[in-house]
Amino acid sequence: MGLTHTKLTLANPAKPELSAFETGALVDTGALHLCVPEHVAIQLKLQPLEKREVTLADGRKRICSYSGPVSVECLGRNCFTGALVLGDSVVLGVIPMEDMDILINPSTRQVTANPLSPNMPSSLAKYIWS
Image: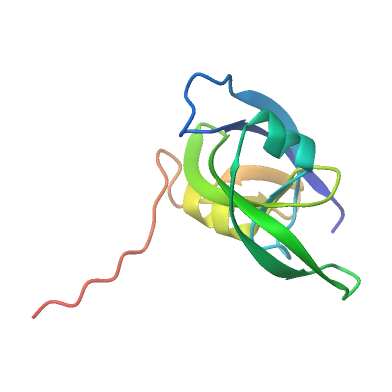
């Protein structure tokens, strides 16, 4: 299918005095989390929350910092998440994509709002009636 990139606006909601900034991101449906390089975590003054073991694309395992909180905006949709601090570029994984209800159009390789909910993000919240 090829690589898909998009623009994100990242901010630290715990530090509203810091400016948000726009960045390019690789959109990876094989990744779960938002991943940011160390210089982005420093710029956003993200708080390290814990260490996590991650499996890289080549199968190697690595310990990295899980930091946050991060506010993510894409296509006018927002979410709050944590970020794995690793690599040299921003990677948007499926957890924040699901939260913002965005997807990749496979024919155009463009990130789009879910066509089933074009006006606002939609989500599943299961409730058992008693």
